[in-house]
Image: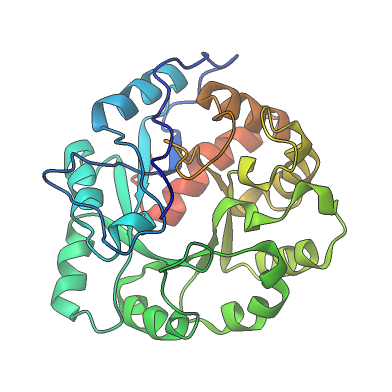
Length: 289
């Protein structure tokens, strides 16, 4: 287990343009308080606390109004903190992605659905996540609820995962832009596999690029790949900050700069509306005006 992660920054650079009305940050984590939500004993790293109040400040600066809280690995299958965050924001403007065991009961799945859960995360990167063999089992359990399967995998594994993901009975969401290193360029087999998955019409991609950077802050080496994916799969992309940026060495991303980066990758207002508002509404079931 590593030492504690860096705490979230209290200073955020305002973006050049705030997000449009109804915009959704599709990937954040809430951490703590520890006395209510203890960390898993088998966690791979120890995060810093990241509170609801601190994230509300992020929303104020960015102008986002909706949010998707993703269950982090350090809570294991104890989803109380994540679902508590949805209760705080309300199901009209928030959703949860949970981590479950395949043996969970239908009753518990229904309770999570009513509480705002809309997908299950399968973490194939951080030690302690479920084995790949659970992918199909989990997807079969959640398919009747209309949930999706969210995959956190390394880019090098995408070509081998492609046939498995195509056979799942749920839609698929790819975390962190597939963890494809920027140094690989835009013609790597992992990108070919990712594009083929997106072209199938049952997969979505999170444009959350900084973990793909080989250079570190300000992560501009990810622009080429992110711009390509935002252009060729505009109708299948959503965006997220990954706040509070856990388990990251070096300079933390600035959330205002992350929104500015999306505006570079998708410079048209139509594309920004699609990625920030319309696609999240379709994927997570938010009401449309």
